[in-house]
Amino acid sequence: MIRTPSFQPSASQRALGRNLGLDLVAATGVGVTMALITALLPTIARRGGLEPIGLSFLAAAPFVANLLSAFAGRFGPRSSAQMAVLRGAGAASLLVLFVLPTAPVMIAVAFVFWISMSFGGPFHLRLWGAMYPARLVGRVVGFIGMGRAAAGALAAFGGGIVADRLGGPSAVAVAGAIGVACALAYAGLRSRSTERPPSFSARGSIQALRERPLLGKVALAQGFYGGGLIAAVPLYALVHVDRLDLKLTDVGVIGILAAVSTTVSFPIWGAVADRHGGLWSLRLGSVLGVIGLIGYALAPHVAVLWVMAVGYGAASAAIDVGIASVVSDQTPLASRAAAMAGWNAITGARGIAAAFLMSALLQLGIVDVTSGLLVCAVSSAIGVAMFARVNPNAPEPVVEGAPEPAGRRVPARSPAVPTA
Image: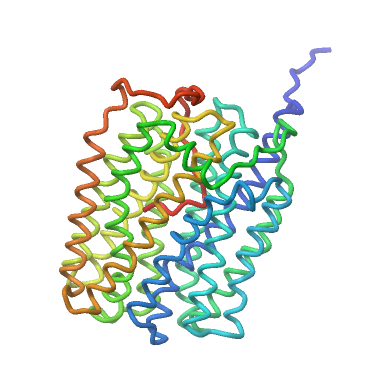
């Protein structure tokens, strides 16, 4: 009798496949809820009468959450089950819009949602390193990122249709229900190590980031680039509603184009980061972001916004991959969550200031929508130039007592970190 070879997967392969499947389900929930919060909620709130300063609160919400995530080492999740509860609570907050669809409640819901994302992000980034072999992290996380972006694309399209028929708040609440169901998948994730992640203070999270001088230079460049994008967020809704008078379906098309572009771009930027380093993803992606700002500033028709959405989607994936790749290159697993929380805190403080600055200038009549977006483009262009000047091969002093960098790693993405 001729015996055929066995193709039964090993226990480790089954565990990896199980984690990957659960991670993908959880990422689907993140993609759906995030798409509605970012793509449709500002326009829905504007149509509900929210003033530009209120739109600034919506724009600042993820960055307030990022700033507070410096405390994630003390108050964030320490296990997969706690992660499921945290993310589920964030998604459940969207259900409040079923009964209280008012602009102030929309702002409050946005804050709760982004806090759940930011506090879970550092732990999730560390969990990826503990669950998946280093040689597979790039492919695994790229697959998860593509799934999340694809879910966001479908949600942006479907959400626009539901919003036009049933109302915008109802569409956001439906996304929240989907997010709650998908968040249960986090509870099933299992790492290869049973060691609980070390706690860290807010001061420790900043110190973990400062231990690597190159990360400080990249964070400064990201401060200018991302600051321009953040300051522009309240102006997008004004372009959609006040200048072009778009339907929510049109806004949904913008969201789906950006999400599809992000989905397709993830593996491309992953290959760029693997071959040339995360800095090249940041450099090239940030150029696309600046082009998008200029396009929004001058757009006479929605078709221009559709083209810019494709560029924004590619830029978003590039920044996600680039940041996580650089942080992973520069930090060992033990301090990675702390470093990511420190990054979030620093960029969060910048984001809060940027979000309100442009709206204040607009309210005072110093700038209009077009000139405001062009000012944002100038800030982001400064960041592009600073990314170009960072030399990853230059010898740099390392803070005494700092652990050695983890070495060359494939890119990973913290799902809680806004890309700007």
